[in-house]
Length: 114
Image (cartoon, rainbow, N blue to C red; front, side, top):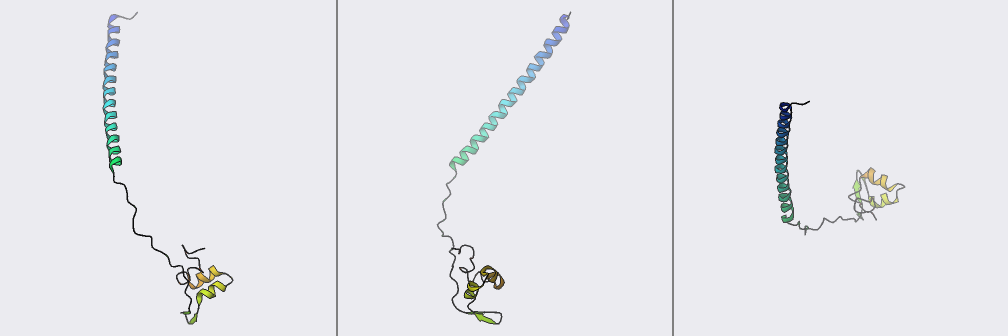
């Protein structure tokens, strides 16, 4: 049978553990309160942030007009846009002669395709 000293020792251990748990709970409450304050600060910052304004500068326009006169590439002068348009493979002709800036419509330059 347990002695009174043994019971008293067990009770002391239980009281000590309860005190430790109380300290732990108090620390958790403090951390939770601090976390809540941080969340509230962030929320206030977000709610009071200025609303972004759309830029009034228009996007640059792309000229999709092919040249309509002859010009020289190497030692040949011709209307290269017409040449590429009539080629069996227009895209290959555009790549071969690098015609994307001079013939944007024919060569389907980005932003110029139908």
